[in-house]
Image 1: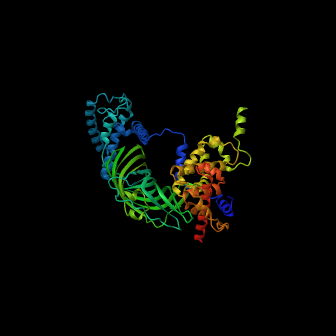
Image 2 (image 1 turned 90 degrees about the vertical axis):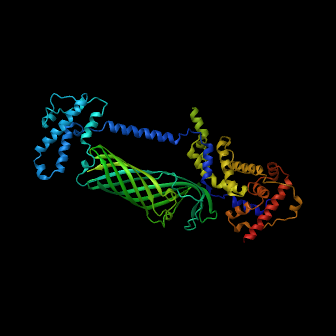
Image 3 (image 1 turned 60 degrees about the vertical axis):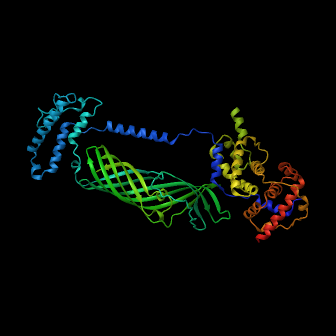
Length: 386
Length: 191
């Protein structure tokens, strides 16, 4: 049987035929030919991270900078300051009698204290601090160098004297700036919306579109970074505002449609959503000391979608598909408790865990928020005081 | 001196295709080079797999298995003939293996029926694109499709086809004839 013209035409037509390939093929090939590697489980990373964080926290706690306030004479000075702020101006102008009373009172306390803690304080030969106190004979000022090493008993007891919760932090209106990072959980827990999976209709734009082919979706950890300012407007009350960038991600097996003659491509798709938000929070200081501050807060955030990017894994090259239009701002409400540690005079490190609820998620692009609108949020950062 | 000799051996020949230039790095296990080689070949080989398997899902299975064979057997490519041709044979063989496993070929000797048909020589193919043609080929019965692909596109002889598929040469001819006629009918129906 000889070759026909038909055969030649077919062969010529098919000689350089190309068909796009879904990304999962390379994934399979790559897994089969890659040298076997030791996989370190996630818990090992988490454990290492937690150990490092604990070590840093311990280091900061043990080696925090000393200030005069950590020894008794400084405590007197602090008390003096407190009295000054609370007394009428006329009385503050002539503080000597009051200070004498305070000093006597403090001296009595310290004498009792020293009788109990004989090993803690040692009378110095001559201390310039003593010269300045009104009760230098009766109230020897312990010198930090004489405190037994490795013990924070003295410091903590000294802190007891100055631990004036709440009132101590009443101060003039001030501003603090903060830089933070923020993660949320990516699990679907008890509050997730249940029900049967219904594949969404392709969101057709110029003949293109993507929809989930299967219910399985792997959500990445929502991650955010931000900066803002906090204004302490009245005693324990502060208001904070800022800008926050958030990235949400998910991976799923989906169908990609385009206007080509091979419209259907089922493959792995990575979806990353980029949001810019404006958080506004109201803070209330529950407990405060020189180093520590426990606070609670409530607030809301308005977020705007910057980009909703789908990375369609395919060969010879991956396809980027953007679906950005038609989404309203995302509003959320949150409330939480926080803790802050002032490790320097004007710098504090804080941790603000909170619960946050996302409103109107049915009109938003699919993400972990649309599946579970109530989310656990942990923000950590540095706060700079001016 | 030894290193220089080694380097010369690994040097791709002048006029080598972009895929062939990647071979030394691929043999060394360079993952990026392997991905580039894959990207260069995958769409063409996908068309080959789709012609044989008739559907995307099976074609991608064959494509994946074929690439694993290509990468693991790279050392057996001696450089005689084009690399793409060598790789294409691997994909065709992988596809045939799959078809045999699934008993999709089912080749039987129905020569008399085939002889009663005759081929239209007029080429109806020129007015359609390769994507449409791929779809039409995919719609052929597996046995006729396989013989048609091997004979018309890959250039196997009927003897080779008979050896590969375990049938007689007469059966191969008959299947080829039936495939041609059915394909031409489908092209006419498209218009």
